Image: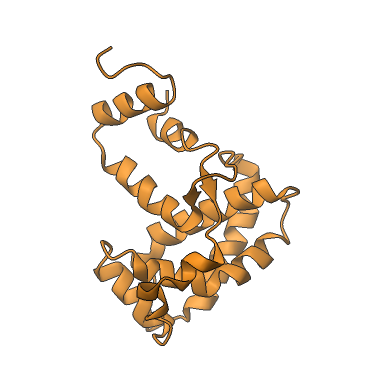
Length: 167
């Protein structure tokens, strides 16, 4: 059993796009005057402050959604899964982004193109609209990845197979 895949699949039915109102949270709105390069630097150097990544998401979510719709998705539910996959990749790869050599928007569009090219062929995990906002998925995936194998297995057994922790 692939524990990582099972952990990701355990989130089925609980992912949803972030609402417009949630992007209006004061701590995120306060960052609207910052350049993308500064937000990227802050998101990388202070990952515990998720508001920097969230500000990038809020700023670029409309573009991402529009470009992803150009791909092979046929249902809104698939678009949410594609968005979650893309933003997870962006979160993972953000430390490699060089603010001196490239504009963030160009870098992001390249990731969108790669996602449209590879994810449908890899059969991305099916994610439906639910309770976890898309930009928070990378943080959840990161937390799952940091768990030791025994703890991850326990989590999967409890959440996916509904086995009690004592068992």
